[in-house]
Amino acid sequence: MIILQDFNLAELTQYLTEYGCQKFVGLQIYGWLSKGADFDQMTNVNKALREKLKENCIAQSVKIIHTATSKKDGTEKMLFQLHDGNLVEGVLMKYNYGNTLCVSTQVGCRMGCKFCASTLDGLVRNLSAGEILGQVVAVNALTKGVRNVTNVVLMGSGEPLDNYDNVVKFLHLLFDTNGLGFSQRNVSLSTCGLADKMKQFADEDFSVNMTLSLHSADTEKRTEIMPITKQWSIHQAVDALRYYFNKTKRRVIVEYTLIDGVNDNYSDALKLKQLLSGMSVHVNLIRLNAVKERKLLATDTDHAKKFLAWLEKMGMSATLRRQMGADIDGACGQLRRRYINEKGATNE
Image 1 (cartoon, rainbow, N blue to C red):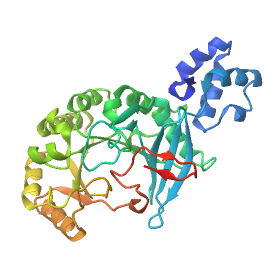
Image 2: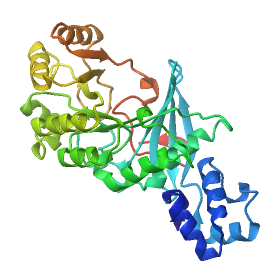
Image 3: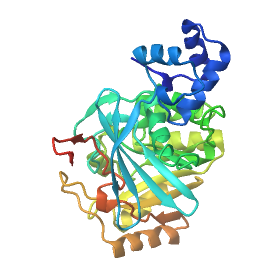
C-alpha cells in the first residue's frame, strides 16, 4: 500500500496523474491529508476517485489508540499504531509558550544506550517520512481547527540520524507551507552522536535546533553507557556539533543525564567544561528517569542542583530540566515499543 503522507505536493500531484487527475486535485488532497482526514472526509474530492485511492493507498498512516495523561503536569503520552500494526509512543508536553510533541523516528532502536527503554527490543524498522509526519497530524487532529502542536522534537524512540533520508524528507514536509508550515526554529533534533550524519545534516542547510546526547565527557564512562562511542568518539561528536553551529550560527544544546555515582561528580563537571570550551552551547541536565529493566539510578535532586551550580560557577550556560510525564513512563528515555493485550491494556 502507498502512504500518501510520504509524498510532497509535487510528488502527490504527479502520482494522481495515474488516475487522470488535474493538478488542483493534488492540492485538495494534500490539504486534507495535513488536516488528518481519511478518504471519506475529503468531501470536495470526486467519490469515484476516493474509492479507487482506497484500494491502493493509505491516507493517514498513524492512529492514536491509547492516551495516558499525567496527573502531575498534564503531559499526554500517545500510543501510535502504524499501518502495519507496529506501535510507537509519543509525548505531548504543555508549556506556557505552546505544546511540544516528542515524535519517534524508528520502531525500537539499535544504539544500545544503557539508560534508554527504546533500545531494549533492538531496531524493528525505520519509520517513513509520512509516518513521522503522521504523528504530528494525528495529534493536531484532536483539536479540530486549532493547531495542537506548536513545537516538535525528534527525541522519541529511535536515533533520527540512523533513519537519515526519511527524517530529512519529514522535515521538508513539516516545513512545507502547503501543509503544516512549521518554523524551523520550533523544531529540535536529538542525536547520540553519529558524527558523519551530523555534518551531512549541517550541509542540508536546515536551521533546526541540534541537540547532542552526550551524558559523559569521559571516554570510558560514555562508552559504558553509550556504545556508539566505540564508533564515533566524544571528540568526533563534539566536533560535528561545532560544525553544525558554524554552519547555522544557531546555539547548540548538549543533553546530560545525571546517573547516580556514574557521571555526577565534580571531575565529571570539570571534564564537561573542558570539552565544550569555546562553544556557544547550552547544557540541559536531566535526572535519570527510571527504566525498570535497568539497574541505573537517578542522581538525587539536591546533588543535581549542586552539579548545576558547579557548571554555572565555571561560566557555563546550563539548566536542570523539569521532569514531565514520569508518572506515565513518558519522560526522557522511557519511551518504548508497546502492544495492546486482549483486554486493551498497554504492555511492554
